Image (cartoon, rainbow, N blue to C red; front, side, top):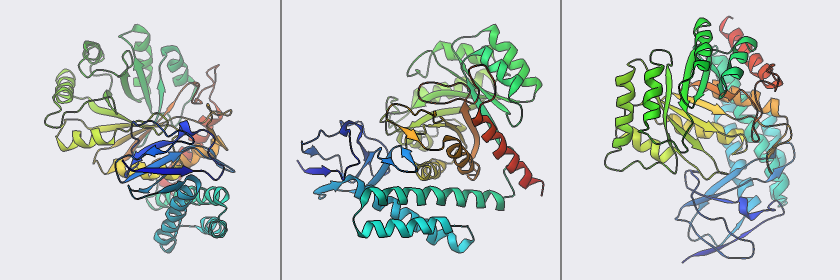
Length: 409
């Protein structure tokens, strides 16, 4: 069996956080290597992901690919830096001549190339990641302006508590036009929330949360769809991740579920949920791709991505990839807490959210952006503990106002 040596230039402090991926960036459910021990290779070609702490960025997962069974040694920071350096160069070549303002990106590139020539890989990696992030945000802003803004876009919050959801509908205001409800069972508490959302002409989405992972054929889900028939427009019916078996010949459980949902409520829009997570070693793409190939009757993808599972460039590339499935995407993002989460941090969280909103808006197939209403250990929220709008909500509102302003010019 082939083995390789993995080394660090000083940015790796916990080998347990390293993740193996396939060539497309989907995490593989394999144990990470141990320090000082030769690691067995995943199937070729493959990639690696690791959260290197970077000045000006924070500590989030970074990814590099292009390794094969013939790869003898991986210097983590060098391989990561070379991938993002190559990506930044490609952005400049593709979009600078199309008029996107990329001067800052080119400055970062020059510094990164100089650092690479002297093999200062940590510093080169920071400049290369900064170049790619600045690049995708600049391209996204330019694209939105040329589209004259996005119309019919849904700005949503996800709520697991009826009282909190009711308070949000009272206090958040524009641009909130969708609320996602996490049901455990039918409850009169949710009726008031739904009525208020309907009176405000908001879209309503929902999913069931009482089983993990949710089984496609639970009676609870059927009962919920029946109970809220005609009131909930978007139903997330099942999760497609490493734990969901979609048989190669006929994914009959999902077909049966989607057909049953349409039979109960003809007007429902059926979503399948997918998570892409280096940290959690989850990827929904292979299962969703098979669902599309085998004509599972669903209308959209509910795609969840956490702020620490990649850079803004990686988010941009993931959306491009999932967009190739040919389904509209309901994007759900978590938010970086000010104090970070476990080992993960993100510098300037509000600026990160502004950039993520721009990336989402720039993709015509992304039709919804959902964000958590309340904070958790791993995510900030759009509302404070007292139910008041947070600074993150103000960021969302400003981007929505900017987008609307472009439409009115």
